[in-house]
Length: 145
Ligand code: FES
Image (cartoon, rainbow, N blue to C red; front, top):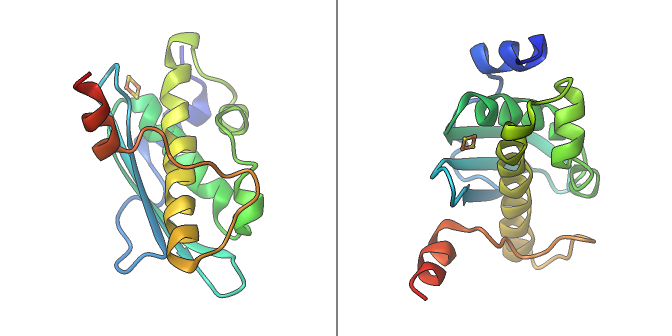
């Protein structure tokens, strides 16, 4: 059911952990399954992502996609990191079963949320970047109505 790459990244996830005083952090949740992902980015003055860590409270596919997504954005510029879509992550993992495609969205959204946090803190604009829609706190507020 899962490709070898998915199994590898699930069993040996890369870049797990936190970054203290991160340049940007993003936390997103999947409303359907309740899984949560947090991404930490360390970005230098040239807007290059020097380090990235993640924590995922989620399924195996979410762990594997976050792990691969962190590998793909590491060393990239913030603009290049925008190209790391869930599709790109899935391709890098040799695909995911259709029922697990939504899990790969968490990684993309968490990276975008962390980039947004970084952009806000530094008063810069990243082309194509939109405010995170599934930020946990916002999600809770929206749920009431
Ligand atoms: Fe929730 Fe995969 S089932 S992220």
